[in-house]
Length: 143
Image (cartoon, rainbow, N blue to C red; front, side, top):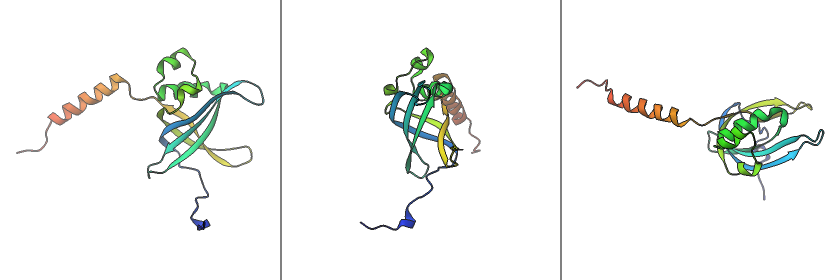
């Protein structure tokens, strides 16, 4: 097989911003240095141009707020409220989060999630639908 090496994307970083994602791997682990609980996730991230990238991330216990946000983002509200989420419950779930760039200790830039967004609540959704219906009733077109 032949290909043009110049056509291969070398920079796998994506611009910072909000992205839809699907969790394709998730595992509860202990970190290798301190033995504290952490979670490993690998997400398929959907780009605006129709392509996807994969982002892998470890979430350590010191950043447990991210696991709470992640659980809420994918609809595991009861688990988040209880403060306990099993990694396997996250598999194949979808949500939305903010991805940013950071530099590793070796200077290499990487992407990671630094916030997961909660879906609109039922109350917010109902208000939005009501506002849409009211706006549709108002007609600024004179006849």
